[in-house]
Image 1: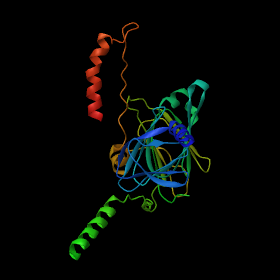
Image 2: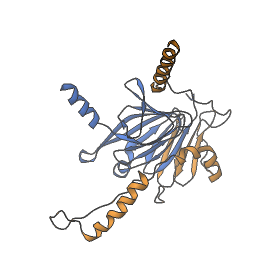
Image 3: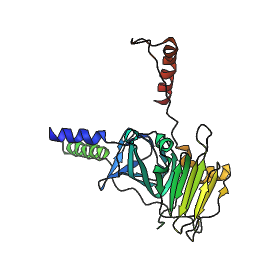
Image 4: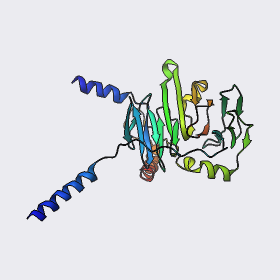
Amino acid sequence: MVCCLTTTVFAEGFIGSVKTLTGKGYVVRKGDLQPIEVGGHIFQDDTLVTVRNSTMDVIFRDDTRLSLGPNTELNIDEFIFDPLHDDMSFLAQMRTGSATFLTGKMAQIAPDKMQVSTPLTTIGIRGTKFLISVEPEVK
Amino acid sequence: MRTAQLALLMLALLLFAACAKEVGPPPAAEAPAPNGPLATVLLLADPDGHVGTVVVTGRKGDLTVLDKEAYAVQVDQDKRLTKQFQMSKADIDRQLGQTLKAFPEAPATFILYFKGKTTSLTSESTKLLAAIGKTFWERK
């Protein structure tokens, strides 16, 4: 019973889900690399991974859309969307590869709360669509 | 008899191999192009044509504000931000086309209204049902 309750709480805490997937997509969750399928849930602190000739599209709870190109690794450091309590934050870390973002409701309500960092840059987002590409092995 | 047993064993092994799920680590990424940019940030127009702003800050404290469609900034080999520049459609398609092509369609939103405190839809909302069904099957 305890096990069931724990599972339910965890499942309700998802921050987004995979909308489409071409090729193979993975998620690194609590240190474990596992394949993810269309409809699979994304949680805070997940690292999304695509491989060669693979793409993955994710929709977050605030309608922010994220599309990963091939050979990409992106960690969702923080995602909080609680407009009622004015608590919002989207922090992501792109390690390598390419990704397109289209900001959702969070950027409309709290435009200074969204930030994506790469090994060499920090990108503050003021409600828009943009693409980031990071070469591998950049430190 | 022994041949038949051997064949059955081989078949079982083949089925087992086919059912095994590949969960190995993803292959290593390709090496970057020599002397090419280390990173690129490109501003695009929203589906409704609106163009927002992104503020790009480099590790050496340099800063660029992108607020025009198809303008980009790159990180050069010295790890500094380049001047922003307009990227041609051909370059965008060649360098970043695969990522852009994968971008999902915007979610479709339909608002349905009910008559007073009933469970009957208004005539305008009833007319929307066909469009909702069509969109569902197109995107399924």
